[in-house]
Amino acid sequence: MIRPVDYKQTDSRWGSLPYRVPGETGTVKSSGCGPTAMAAVLAALVSPYIDPVTCASWSRQHGYKVLRSGTSYSYPVAQAAAYGVSVRRLNMANAYNRPADAVHGQALAELQAGNWLVACMGKGLWTSSGHYIVVYGYSAGKVYICDPASSRADRLCNTWELFSSQVKYYWAVEVPDRIRQGGTVKDGDYRQEDFIREVQMCTGTAMDGKAGPATLSGTVTVSARKNRRHAVVLPLQKKLRKLGRYTGDLDQTAGPLFTAAVNSYQKQVCLSANPDGEITKGQRMWKSLLAYGEM
Image 1 (cartoon, helix red, strand yellow):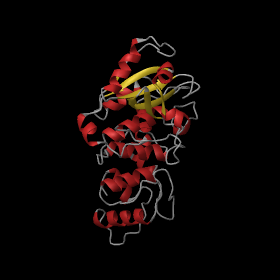
Image 2: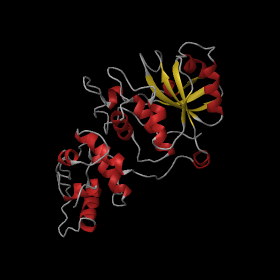
Image 3: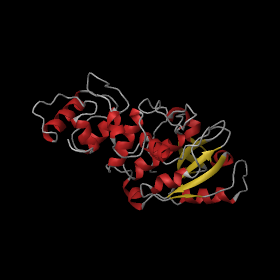
């Protein structure tokens, strides 16, 4: 059974990042179940560089975070399409507590055909209001779930009967044959626009995926001594790994391997005779990584 990536919106690497529009105080931890669910799908089907930071920043930029609510029901289709994945919304009418609704049979057929479901749950076991989850398997009357907010056994595997009684809306995720045959992707692209947008989200600047003056001025100095656990360390690790320079974990900590990657980049790309293991706010290495103007 092929599984999505088991991301949690509570993860310390991104849980405290803002997922909100003006007038709100929400974070990925409190309101980011939608982007976390889609990150779980896209990381498995497209690229392991996609995580909740990637999807939450994309959602915010494109207006899918709803004021004083969660994530728009139009978000899953749009987010998937941005990465070339087919996601179809199965119902427009709320199916909560409507066991005779034909959409439940359609959703079950998708699972039995090897596709996944994104489901927005209503009040019950999974939520007290609304909550996105990913369903990736069905066997012997039970469904298998990636829940962005919980690792409780009964929320990860339960009966189809209980699950379907609490679903409000379904989206079918087309799982390509290459994934069904070979499992989740081991490598993939890390798009420059994603890197820039993630830096923007982590540093609190406006998110448009383009490296302008505001983005550069919003950068921070990062090294093993300064801001070593700043949120922006995560996209920096991802960028340096994609460039073949960072070999450590994506743990949002600037440790020895991060320092080595920075030194390598400074020496070979920035042509520095004295690499110092530091990405200095607004300076040469940030400009190079963001592809901002001339180094």
